[in-house]
Length: 286
Image 1: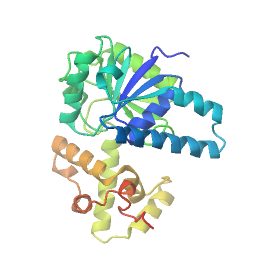
Image 2: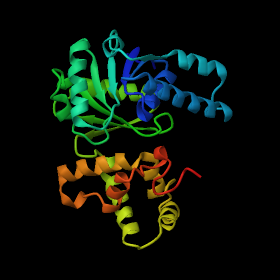
Image 3: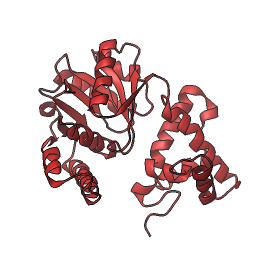
């Protein structure tokens, strides 16, 4: 099945943005990968290369396929240039409402009226972000999971004014990308992160209160619930700062019962953010 999207701009070349670009390129879509600094673009492209090298070593992809895929990814520093002749923008910048709204205000000026705006936000209300545009009917949540190239799920989130046509179009794109779309109405954390936050936050409280050691909690969850990763392994993988941002947002929207555990706040303040910092609940510097 061919996609109606021939060229897509992905804004933000971090872990999620570069991963989304890889997914699109693999499906034969041209991708303009955009960031504000060359060092961020280089980091994103290096991340893509490392992933491809790993897949090649495992026999999952060959040199010819890699060459074709990489030709589909075009790095850009100029947002206006990168958003010409596209059909879709996927925003994957920092999880900050003000920053996202500022970006969408710029995109509104640069993009044709028929361009769909998608956000990879993991928790924010779609309608709040859509208020920064003149096309709320064409703004939709498209929440990929880390790493996008390996995770099958995409949460498709409908804002208050998102049109049925936009929803249908994005669901079709997800299927073209060989992803499984799950439709959700907007709510803090949507489906996965709403449930995940309560689970992870309770694990932090278990550790904090001395009920069990982190290694034992991780092992219990993996063996008892058949999870591939324990809560502390998963938190380190996602990033403790990301989890704190999600938790704070859900708490602000839904009440004090969602308040992040003091242990999580303390670790983020100390810079113990997980794998990306070399230390989180576990030490990765060894």
